[in-house]
Each structure stands twice: as C-alpha cells, then as structure tokens.
Amino acid sequence: MPMYNLAQLAGMEVARPESILGPALFIPSGKVEVYGPTGRFKSFLVMQSCAAISTGVGLFEWECPKPRPTLYVQGEIPFEYLVERARHLYAAYPTDQMWLAH
Image 1: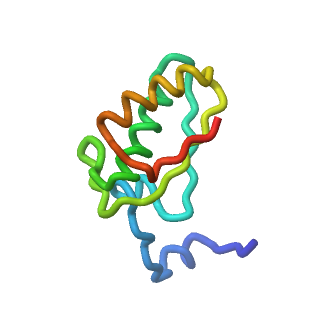
Image 2: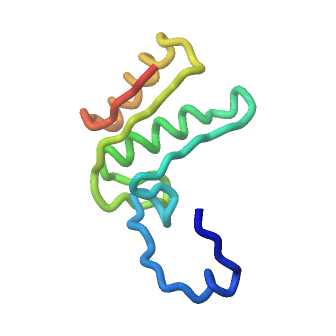
C-alpha cells in the first residue's frame, strides 16, 4: 500500500471520479453501507436511491446524469416486507435495472 505525506497528497493532480448521484455521493465501483438504529428508514432511503439511479431521475436535490443498473442487498427485513416495498417503489420508479438480493 503506497504511503504519502500530506504535502505530497496536497500537490497531486488527480481526476475526480464521475458522480452517479449527487456531488460524489455515489461513484462508479463504489459501495455504500448505511448503518444506524432500527426504525430510522435506512432501507427506504437506500432502496429509493437505487431506484433513482436505475431510472436516472435523481433523488431529492441530487441529480443523476444517466440511468445505471443497481444492486440492493437486504439481509435484515423479512422477505415479505421487501416484496411489499418493491411494489410501492416500482409504482414510482418502473425499471428492470434495479436488482435486489435477500
């Protein structure tokens, strides 16, 4: 693993990765993990973010330059709740580019 001191990093010219959603909120090859107490609507936020990215419509004030396939991995909620949420989400974001794993 390369090591750099602060002066070296500050002096580097690097290209910023393309943003998928918002100002570098999601980037290509990036992974997002959301953690917090139960009942804080984390899964709703992440599912809606995936749907927004897969349709290219954006979310809140965050823009999405183009649609991209997404993968949402859920291991906490019962499968029946995931199906129910997927139905509601599909009504707002009809796409076949959002994949879900349970």
